[in-house]
Amino acid sequence: MPEAFIVEAVRTPVGRRKGTLSGVHPADLGAHVLRALVERAGVDPGAVDDVFFGCVGQIGAQTGNLARTSWLSAGLPQHVPGTTIDRQCGSSQQAVHFAAQAVASGTADLVVAGGVEVMSLVPIASPMYVGEQAGLGSPYAGIGWRENFGDQEVSQFRGAELIAEKWGVTREDMERFALTSHQRALAAQADGVFDGEIVPSFGLTADEGPRADTTLEKMAALKTVTGGGRLTAAVSSQISDGAAALLIASADAVRRYGLTPLARVHTLAVVGSDPIDMLTGPIPATEKVLDKAGLTLGDIDLVEINEAFASVVLAWQKELGADPEKVNAFGGAIALGHPLGATGARLMTTLVHQLRRTGGHYGLQTMCEGGGMANATVLETV
Image 1 (cartoon, helix red, strand yellow):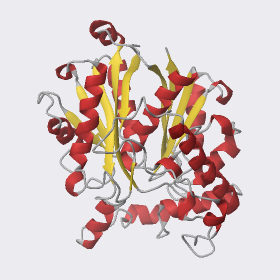
Image 2: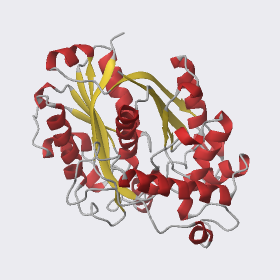
Image 3: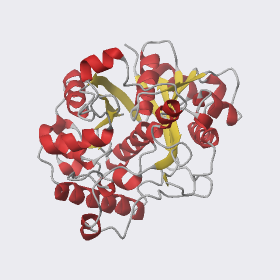
């Protein structure tokens, strides 16, 4: 089967809620990374076969097929189509999967995969809440859903609490993990680790989320999300704004356009998991992708697993025995932020650049997703 290569990957800095990027229209933010992507790759944008973009909050400014409006807002050729994907938090990782599958199937040679989310403008779950307020119903009110799952709460916060309980993850465990996330992100910024992957955007040159003043004592003083629970804002991903994009190419396109591959998309997997626990999917997704790849976790040099909540990553580590030093070595969403539909592409951009920078051979990316799902991807440097 034809191979799929990542030949370029860029991202905006991740802006914090109501921060520097909060006033940027989502299509303009998406357009910004798209222009940077084709310029850095040095390809004719007219040669791109398709654009896959992730976006979760598809309402208001983020409707109208954001992949298409971002591409057109960038002033790029009108004959190039685009489609917008919602696989919840894994939307732009799924965009990479669809792009790689299109290339590997031989139906496309150059495909853009990415995502954008401006959560300062479109808060999480806006389509559901606004729809309910407008009398359009709830996704969990159907007869079939109630027959299978009753009327119990369906939320990522509950899922994260259930995971902490099931795997014996304490609040203190999560706070120590969160502090490490900030420390790693700050160290990466100080060392210029992200410089090669970030495109300065609308006056912002660095991620706004990492907090140099956070301490375990400050975290311990915060109220929990629910009474008697373990989760606080400090151990959860930050509300953020951002965009990222990658260019996926066939071997023929690499030769034809004189491109330099950064990595090969080695193996893909996606799984479903319990929709109430919701966030356990990275465990079976990792097992599935490694089995398909013929690899073990010990073969992996760097792991990027989304820090939706500290309990998700800590349970994954406990279950699979992962080396913490290889996991989110440059910080994660607790420090860097989680702009929903952009995060999968942001993680992939960081993973491919840092594999190259550190001399790693195999990289793994996985992330939990609303509804009980998870994507997993193995990259191989070339």
